Image (cartoon, rainbow, N blue to C red):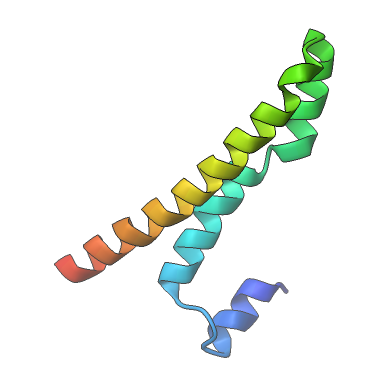
Length: 77
């Protein structure tokens, strides 16, 4: 089916890993498909690099935030 169920089944990933992976991938999903075409359409291709950099940093922050939120809520149980 996919790599994620296989990782969980083989105990190579847990719920915290899935939370981090999901947060980062949701932020990074718009990398080239969105920004390059959008900046080209607007005639502002000079901002493409900055948009990609902001997505990169946003994905890292999203992954770190997901990890800490998961840890916090796991400790509350």
